[in-house]
Image (cartoon, rainbow, N blue to C red):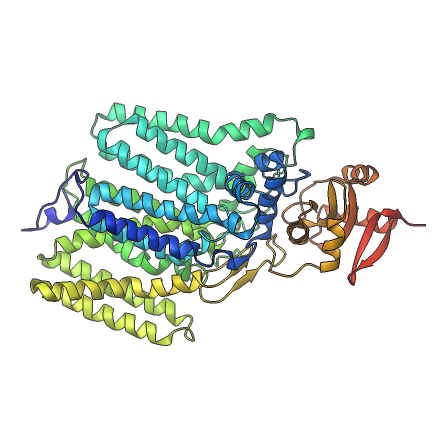
Length: 607
């Protein structure tokens, strides 16, 4: 049963996964992946170290296996990043294999993007056919925030790849009521947890609903299969938490971002419920407030000036496709594949969008990359099913509205950057109006006109977003809060991501000549990360990400200095845990100037 089958005189389509491939399918998939690879790999090193915070940890992982396993900020293993280390495992191993560089660090990110497009295509094709799969894959590949994140070193690239993997496994499981495929979906989401903790679980309601509703077996078995998948998820997500928290704290780094030096607290607190409700180091916590990064909470957040250009280009079209599709399939059998696909990608989109919209803790616009696969899947399925039913007025009206609204919203988003390609928004709007009118009036009945109308509709829907995506790929982005678009984003603001500044050459040379465990120490990760990346020598980031973690303690730092393991202290950065250390250093050691920059030589006591 498909959407079109619920409309009078609509052509029918198969209900199961397509059995074979048309001759054009494989070349078209190869072309999609090649073009995606070109977009993501092109000029890959333009962003340099991207986010210094994660770059420094990836570098540390190439120098120390312990640092790689725990996700330490430095090879001396003082403190970890404030996320689980799964994405750092990929970047660190790539650096060990190819030599550490911007390209080797970002290569796994780009490959995660290409893999995500391929998996989304494969999942959509099984239930909705090759054309829907191509549209969905292209929509994901060309979403600006996806281009940004698959060329950046934040953990979101691996997170999205593993969540799409989980969706593919869910599709396979639902087709045959297979608990094994469903368990693999749990494993995929479990490892996604090791990339970005609880955010990975936002897709679980959609996965569970689809299987519970559409798997071709009895209710009891469906419930048991879901329970087995939960067990697989807990084991896959929990093994690292158990290992870290059972490891003697004295022989591992401090867990950055936690309040009690445990991975469990990090996952449930700062990186978990703290993000949703505020507090736990996230700020916020007041309904209707403004987080300072993503704008005010509420349903309008995903289309505001922070999030809108990142991911919302096709969001109106996706919601139209979801509502119309569920209505048209309301009388379909329980196991109907078209409706199952709409529930899968629609549930993914709605749950994620609602949580992001009402989060009162820290939320950054680039988080929206997690929405991109859901939106893309809905657009691919909805557009193809409505086009199949174009002989019916109801389908034509909905499809025309979808095209017109998408073009109109593209105009609005482009109008927010009026100085950039000003002609594009008018072109997109004109194509949208023309294509929507032609579709609604039934011009498709003329064969040649149908091709022209379909092409105009694609250009109206994808043109603005595609141009913005290419501009994003051609532009370098760095810092802790990157944003897509034609303007280079270099945001650090003291939040742990370097802003692309150049380290003092003479100071870097001095750090390279040190022989202790750490060349230097500095408050917070911003200054420490840039010094470590430039010199290749470990630098202690006192207090971790924002300088607020109790690592190292004053006693620990004094012991390192007494053992001759730290040579310099570089003032600045963010305070917090560095306050007592800074006071002790200033009162105890000699101030020197290296390349015009004031530092403290910890081998030269005062007097």
